[in-house]
Length: 416
Image (cartoon, rainbow, N blue to C red; front, top):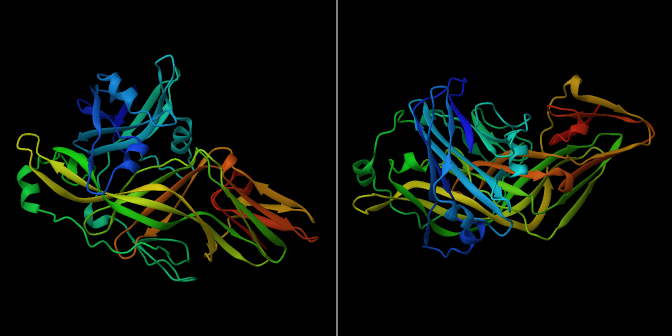
């Protein structure tokens, strides 16, 4: 594997250790009973050169091969402590019969979606030889600047400085946790190895450079995930279709002890079978279409490498368990249309779009009053979500959010 280690501004980061680990498979995580522990395994290391480039060799190929899930995917985690902040990047790869590691195409597409991805985020792409190539970006998080999330009532505005589901209440069947471990600050402080920035995140930092693992707490069922926003006007009716597949993936936020968003961790794949949900809306209707996912909770625990002492890091990971089969719609507050993203459609015409690359949609979620965070659904739209509009004899204007409707943007609406 090759790549570059840099700051968000593009400056190379030299002489830094990059560690490659493999995660337990999705099947192993789902089968883990409550109270049991499971951990990632280090399989490779590398140091960055003066120009920030690095070349990583896998020292333990057998462990890498054993980490394949039922669909042949391997979940890799790359970490690097730097003077400019931490790197924590997760993505999936495959290994062919020829023994060559290649990036998982859907994850490459998600990282390359310029509509959603920020240049300050790490990413993976396929090198000219087909092998994974990584763009690792250091990140610092000021605790006081971490964005909180909020559940807002239908039609109300999101409070300043918060992340909200657009104009809609958060619905969840989960209840607040009553089994939280005790966070022992004195134990954590005694074992901490101060990071260069002191303000960064990832399990290595949460555990002060010590060994870390997950300890399953319990299942949380029924958190709703927004997929797309649609609004008809006086000249259109609307249709929507959602279909799960093996390529459907989901990432969920990790929260700190104060319930603020820290980073996105956790992913799941859809079932090997396909399930389809269809919906229709009349004229002058706003629909924020959502589906429901279940989650497992894993507390991140630390262990001193020398003494064996264990303690809860204070962080919990909410890892998707799978699609629950539930879906519905709610109101949302439409965006202001930019003329550059508006198209005119003639009378008695019908349009629909199914995006042919991975798209991401971001919104809030909550489990009772236990946690707030940022949830991102990643779906291959060519076989996942189709949004349609049917016009009357007068024709209609259609507008997309940050792009024209035919590009498959997540939000569209009829406009005057």
